[in-house]
Structures are given as C-alpha cells and as structure tokens.
Length: 184
Image (cartoon, rainbow, N blue to C red):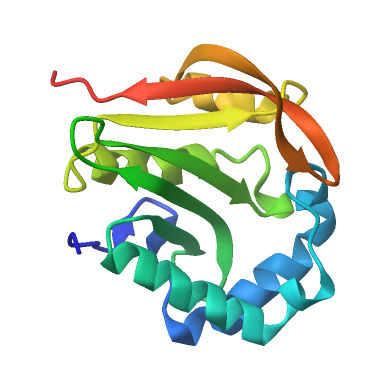
C-alpha cells in the first residue's frame, strides 16, 4: 500500500476513514440523502445503517491496501464531522497509471469552495505520492456545478457517453473528462 497521509487544507482534514468514523459517515449519508439522490444510484434502506457504513470503511481500507482505490473523507478542521468525500477508484497501474474520481459535498457546503479546496489537495497526492498520470471524472450534462468545478481544477472534456450509468433508477448520459499530470 502506498503511504496515505492526512492531507490538510485551510478548512479541512482529508484522510482514509477509520473504523471509528462509521457514525460520522452514517450521519453524512443520512443528512445528505435527498441532496445526493439525483446524482447517485438508487440506495436501499440498508445503505443508511451503521453496519453498512462500517463495512464501507473496511472495504475502502482493503481497496487502499491493495492499491485498487482510495476513498477519502473530508472532515472539518477539528475532525468532528464528515463534510465531503471523494474516491480515486479503479486504479490501473502498468502503462496506464490512471483512475476514476468521484466526489460529493454536503448540501450545506455548496458554493463555499470546499470541494475545490479538498480536491486540489487530493489531486496533489494522486499525481505526487500515488504516482498517477491520469485522473478521469465524469458528470451528467445537467450537473452544472460539477462541470464548473472540474473545469476550474483543470479537467478537459474528452467525450460524451450515452446511457453511461444508472443514476436514480435511470440510465444517464455523462460528459467524460480527464486531468493529466503535467511535469511542470
């Protein structure tokens, strides 16, 4: 496993979740269920349990251990609550050195720049210590906030995929973007 430090920004602490974070993760999920619903797959009631949150954390740590994915939680500065999350998933090594990025910000943090702040730190780690060359992020065309965020972070549009993912019970088109590590 690659070293996964605690990343710090002016307003956040970013790290892999620990078993002791299960209740924080559950609160994040429950408090933002309606906010995330239009952008995520359908969730069954089991998703909103402490057991599922604990299992998610355990599986995330196993993914990091095997260099398959890195699910980060973004906590407020005193680490009292999870305010966002992002995951570098589907890590592919060899000649590709790439992954996918997914993220979500609590409803109360919208428009504050917190997600950009957290992702800048995360991308610094991904292109630095994690040694990735390409990070891909895809968004639904109507998700204008994600489009603007990814553009500000330097992601470039690479394509358009019809019926790409099943979101909220419907097949949704997605805009395909990527950010490439630059050596400068």
